[in-house]
Image (cartoon, rainbow, N blue to C red; front, side, top):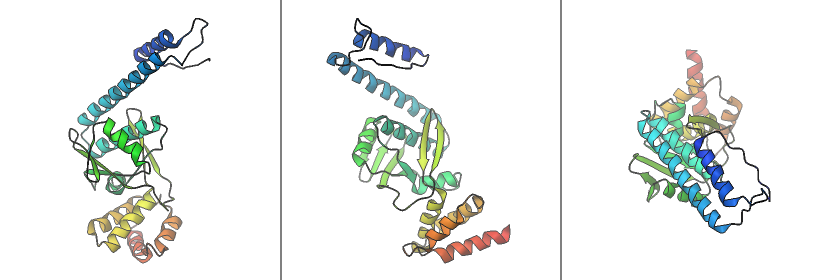
Length: 241
């Protein structure tokens, strides 16, 4: 069985290649991946490497002043670990997404994710030191709380936002139009004044980037019934321009 690897030029990668050669390489130059002692050793090495990478990112989070950047780094780490297991990336929704799009004018202390594979997410959260308390996963050392209140985005079809957050990490956020619909519903149906203010802020700031036909079409749907309120805010913004 032949195997081909591309190793970056780093001490860590060189040591890993030495391990593969010494443990799996046969005399004929091919690799034997059915050496079960080596398989167990390799599994342990991978787990150790994952913990070391996670710890390095934890140290970066501790040194990061921006609360939002800290949250995005954490979601970036969760995303990376899920993808390494062949799982899809979670999507940031709710207040954390609003914090990003409002550039931290709004802030929430917890991170809301849309994710369907709760078992895979729970496994990752335990691996990186979170503890389950009710609906939330809590990381005491970093003072972070994560919840997955939605299994998926549902009918949200606006393009998601992909954000590079450093340390080779990225995370995905709900699209701006779908976030506006969510906040507009909270404004009208929950009588949330802060959400009314945030909707106006987002519409004003992203006015030229918003997909207005999509946004207004979704606002017209019976389950939302917010078209009139949306149009009033839009007209107010147009008068100021």
